[in-house]
Image (cartoon, rainbow, N blue to C red; front, side, top):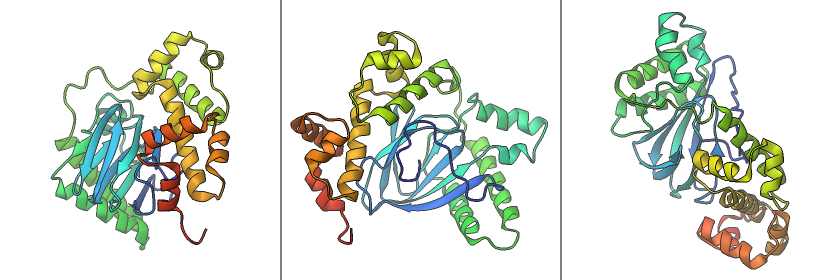
Length: 297
C-alpha cells in the first residue's frame, strides 16, 4: 500500500526516519473513494497492513484477499499489489520494513537462512493472517513507538521488529512455494515495469501496441501475454484504470467539467468515458464529485 499518489510502477518507499529502515502510519479511509486509492505497484520492502475497523480488499500477485477487523495482509518484497476496494469506516495500520534493517545487525547464519531468502523471494510469508492478536498488538505498539519518538525509541523499535519477524518466520511461512517468486526480479519484470512507466507518462495520448514494441523490443502478442500474466489485467483494461484514476483525482480536486476531464485523461468519446468510469468506480463521474468533493475547495 502507498500514500495517495499515482504509483504505477516501482514505488520508491519514503522512509521519514531513514536511519531506522521502516515506516509506520495510521490510515483512515473515510475521506477517500471506496476504489482506486492504492494503485498497482511493487517495492523491495516487506509490508504489513493491520485492519482495525471495517474491511479492505488487497490484491497480491493477482489474488484478492478480503481483510476484515483483526486481519493482517502481508506483501512480500517485490510482489505486485494494489487495493481498490474498502469500506468507508476502514481504519488500518501500515508498516513498511526495509530488510536492510536486519542485514546491518545480523550477519552470517541468520542473514543467509532468513533475510536473504525473503528478500529474494525464495521464501514467502502467508498473504493473509487471521486471529493473530499478538502480531496485531506488535504492529500497534510499533506505530506508537515510531510516532512518539521517545528517548532511545530506536532500540524499542528494533526489539519490536525482531519479535515480529520471530512470529512470522515461526508460524506464518508459506510451505512448498515452488517456483519461488520471480515475477518482478526477472526480465519480464523489467519489461512490464517499462510498460507501466510508459502508460503513466503517456496515458493522455492514444496508446498503441506498436508504441510499446518500441519500448520493450518484443512482439505485440508477447507484450499482451506477459502483461496479463504479471498483472492479471489486459493491457488496455489497465490503461483505462489509470485514466479513470486520474479522472477521479481531477473530479474531486478541481472544478473542471466532466467533458474537459475526460478529454484530458485520454478519452475521445464522452459516452465511452462515462460507461467505463461507472464500470470501474461503481458510480458516475458526477456522483463521485458530489460524494467526495469538500465544501471548502
